[in-house]
Image (cartoon, rainbow, N blue to C red; front, side, top):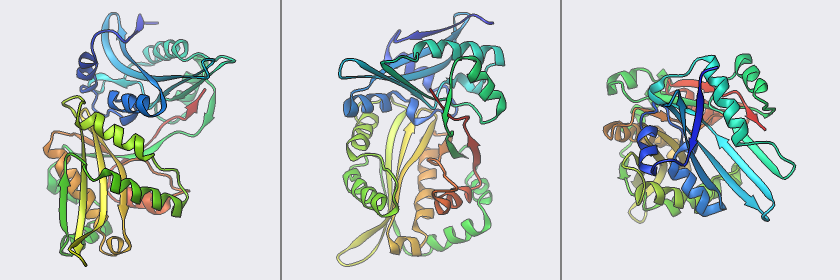
Length: 323
């Protein structure tokens, strides 16, 4: 086994953010802004780890720890570890890293550990985690990654034919797009998200967490963080009315499409396609290299899944949730 260690909470947050920025496909849940927002909302304490092989950093990982009633210890590590410069380690190194993580999130009668590793689904990953002492308890995470390093022409050519046709229709629908890199109207969007979650039966991100996450990314975060709301407006009474909106969160070299909403009029005009397309261009101009489209669930949300697959992005599935 190679010599592996995880240095926890060493150096400054700036040092850790500089390493995080080297991860090509960083995940929102591993960003320090997310950890800080979870701390202020639910009392979690983020622990920032630098994974080192023979003394040199090769990856980063964040765990969130919380004590309940001063006795019960809740630890979670979701959508990590992440590897610097896209250099996924060899099998021996991966095993050494996850053995270290098992020590960092141990099982205990008075504790609960939750690991949702950013490892590909498959027998090899399952066997690795079993050897390291983890037990599978749930499915993995499925999402679509959209490459923003291509030209706009190449990005458009990669869209499914029907998706591209409806985007052209939305571009001709006379909609006005508002781009807000401060996400000032986020409380309004969270109200729409709450209402649509009740109607469709899913569990949304809470308003307080969303606002604190926006604040962490916009008002005091890393230079590589950010939040942008793109809203499509149509003529109405009075004035222009929002018909579709999406919140994008930037974390390092990547971003996540976190919340999307469309009214009946917006759906008829295919406004969400226009909102997503404009958001992609805005993020690309800011140097973001890849967009996580925010998860798919073919069984519970087939329409949303079809919409995201129509972008032509890369579909990925992680190995599962473990204890």
